[in-house]
Image 1 (cartoon, helix red, strand yellow):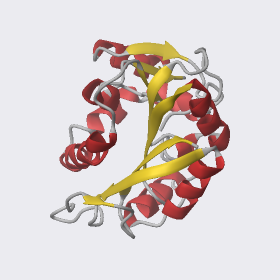
Image 2 (tube, one colour; image 1 turned 90 degrees about the vertical axis):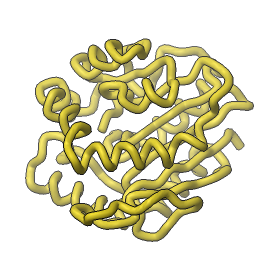
Image 3 (cartoon, one colour; image 1 turned 45 degrees about the horizontal axis):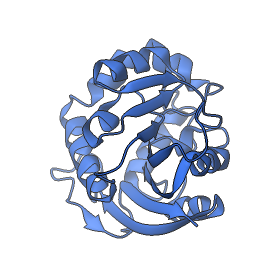
Image 4 (cartoon, one colour; image 1 turned 30 degrees about the horizontal axis):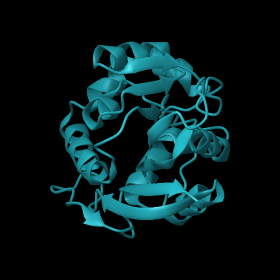
Length: 220
């Protein structure tokens, strides 16, 4: 839910950051977070530093997956990320303060649909990636019941989701490849709809209707 310094949602994120972070402690949020981590973890490089998360938010993913550096436009979120051990930098994902080929891995979780210019975000990720590095994108696809839920929240005026523009799984693949990456692997989770007794496990590949997908890509 984070993108550039121009993102209007940064104001809401600063104001309601406690509410956002608390969702991860709720029953639904904790279950989704656990599954999303398990979806991402096998694809994320365990060796090589430094690694960057674009749209780090409060640092929940970066701190567990080992992205040493995180950028975000929201100051209040960055304070929490720093408290979780992340080197937190206030910056726009479309125009980072880093040199070319600076990172071995770039992580983006739930950020592309909130970016004003998502393709530019991906192109900047490619610029700061070492040619041997990888990009890992996590997203809630529009063509899922989870995506429909968040879209509905946005249309109802939710301060976090109203600036979002979810995209389909196929649209995500197309966007990543258009930015000059090749897809190396994919995983899917949240295989059951929101509110179901069981959220489902994690499966390899892009599963139709999955509420969360992860794409591993390398510079083409």
